[in-house]
Length: 334
Image (cartoon, rainbow, N blue to C red; front, side, top):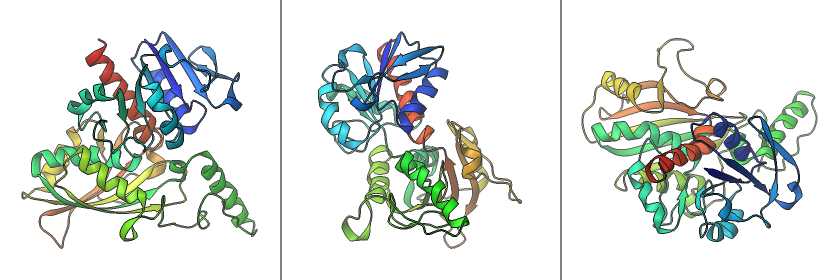
C-alpha cells in the first residue's frame, strides 16, 4: 500500500516516519510532502532516501491513506481537497468536533472508525485527551465515570520545534544570568510554569482546556462532567496529568490497579515508595501510557486519583495516527 505524510519535516511528521519504519503496515511507496521551501530535500525511510514534494504540486490520488501532520491552517486549506482522493488521518484540531468526522483512539472507540466514510476524514484527538481517555476507558466500562477533574503538565514539544529550542536557549541564558526573551510563550518558560495553553475562550477557560472537555465527551461519553486546567511546563517531551475521577459505582483500589494493568496501551508503575512512579523523562520514546499514584480520594469515597504520563509526540500524536491506519487497513483493506 502507498502512504503519504503531509508535514513530513515537522516534529510529528518525523515521528510518523519513525513509527512507520517499525509498523507492520506493508508500504509499497511512501510520499513525503511539505511546504515549497522543503521541496527537493531528502529524508531517510528505512534503507532509502525519499525526495520531499511540495504540497502545491502533489497529487493526492497517489496514496489511499494520507497522514496530515501540518497544523490547522494547512488542514483547513488542503484536507477537503485531499479527502476527495484519499482517506485523511488528520492530526490537527480543525475537524475534531465535526459530527461527521470520527475522533479515534484505537484502544477506546474503534467501533466509531466506520464513520470515516461520511467525509473520508478521521481526526486524531488532542495529545492530552488521548492519554487521559486511554486510562479512563477501562474504568468507565467497569465503574461508570460521573466526573473528572484534570490538571495537565504539558511539555513544550506540544507547541512545536521552535518552543523546544526556546526552552533550551532560555535555560542557558538563565543559568548565565542573561536577560530572557520570550518569543513563543507569554512568559519565560525556563524554570517556570505557564497556566495558559492556546487562546482564552468563554468563562476564563483556554481552548486547550475546552478541547480536553469536549473531545473526551465525544470519544467516551457525553454524560461525563469534566473540568480541566492546562499548564505548560519546562519539559521537552511527554505530558503529565493529575486526574481525579468520581465514579457512580463503589470501587476497590486493587481492582482498579488490576483493570489498568490489563488495559491495552497502559502500563501501571505504582510502588508507593521513593521513585516508585513514572516521570516525563522516563516516558519519552515509549509507546505506552504510564499510570502511577493510584489512590482513593480521602475527601470522597467514590473518587480516585491517578498520575498519567505519556510521550505526547508518540501516543499523543504520531503513534495514534499510525495505529488508526493499522486498524483501518486491517478492517477495510485486508
